Length: 73
Image (tube, rainbow, N blue to C red; front, side):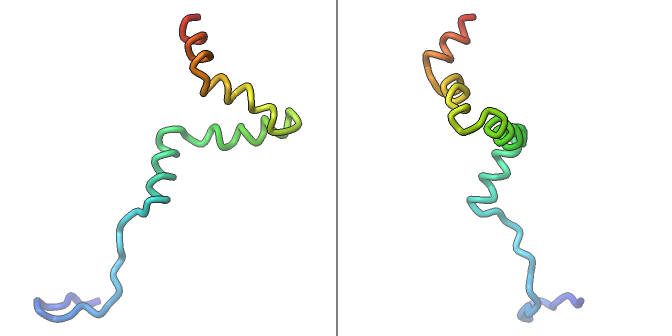
């Protein structure tokens, strides 16, 4: 590989270093959340017999009344 001189056009392909929106979002999720939920949620759904088993988890995580109750106890 030769280094082009000043003023000469660079004809060799160059590596583009960058992240798109999807890649950056996935990287951020893995950094902040980790891979635990992505492994355990399918196992819970399989063990409990369907996606309705996740309703309690969603209620406990998302409901303001649940977070208030858990916060007081």
